[in-house]
Length: 299
Length: 314
Image (cartoon, rainbow over the protein chains, first blue to last red):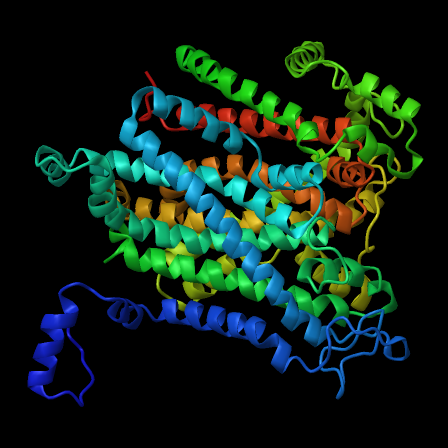
């Protein structure tokens, strides 16, 4: 299976196979599954554009210029301008600075709370398990996006509340995933051995369970980042996320929609494409990682 | 089967109770005093007191919940703050439009998913399979409002073959109703089409690898007959589960899709009510969505048990 580059000498390749092949590293994984690379590159490009927006965006994203309102895409404005004469391309670039962090924070909230619930439920079992999982079932009983929208509607529309709401609806998936894995691993011999040797629960979880949880978690992280992006876009399209004039992809589509009938397609197509690319990137990466990491799908 | 049904229903009770608590709590999540939020500029102490009385907010919390549950069990979801209509009536008026859209979206997703998923499985690893996989990831990545706007742009404004939005009652004009239904149904159903396609494909691949398929082939049955008569029936069993989950996706998507296409359903009502701070209507819709979703999942489990006799639930 070793298909190293032909430039390696035999001895170099041997060193490689001993030091790097034994614990399959990330490099091997990506090289064996080029689809992972495609997803990673797409996401890195999007992140870089968002990070560097203040320097690479051609115009100020919130500068109103009434004389140049609703210009079609052209030399000065590659993606055209919106109803207030703001440069659509610059706003799309800056928009990533809202959507991407929202996705990361929301996933973080879901992972932390859900992960802890799952660990506690799986490890303690009995009443703890029963009570915690009923709580999780209750969240799961709501269609996720409707719950998120209802939470933001109650808490009041803002970026922070959007992050909280999207995070809360992600709790069940992490709780269930972690619990299932913990239950599976708990009864394995090496965990029993560790316990027999007097290891504390914290040590057992940290040293023996977390590493085994990692693969399914990584896949889920990518897929739920995709969901979080989609949910943020939806909330902001409905006007329930960052307030104007913040450049936010969903809300740009919301305002652009009223100008569609005049034929001003560029106000919606730019931010729409950005949302699709970001969600696609995370979904693609998650899919590729699952193919690569899930032993049941290998072969 | 009956015993299983009873047990499943029994398990639903604590969850449903927690759901009602969650929905009840929604209004109390509002920072500050709901009456102030609802009234905004038109705030007067008298009006605020009236709202508190109407919503029962002047009583202690546990009592409020018990009163809420008591009314709920009588089918009373309260009254709209905006137009004083009973919430059940407000939702009931909008429900047919949403159900029509939901069924159309479901049909679209199955019509696309089952043939394409089957073809992808039969052509595993070939060009068609890759195209289908790409379409799947694309289908779950395009938000339905973006897809809706692209459809409006293309079919409504560029080709001018379909009306860009609005609604005509089925009883008034069938062609008018259907022509306005096409785009929202596609926008709403494409996400489901993609997930269903993925499941049809993987489940078809699994079934095609089984011995009885080889036996059928060995006995001289043609591919078409094997796929149609032997494989598809078993391959579609897991798809049933996904269709159940899709009910949730359709409920969620209806909010946005109906807003994009000015489709006068429950989803649009929800969005309108959120912006007019009509808490009783929002709570009513969220509760109904959760109950519909739970019921759909129950139904899926039952259908599943009925379709696949190997599954026993005792």
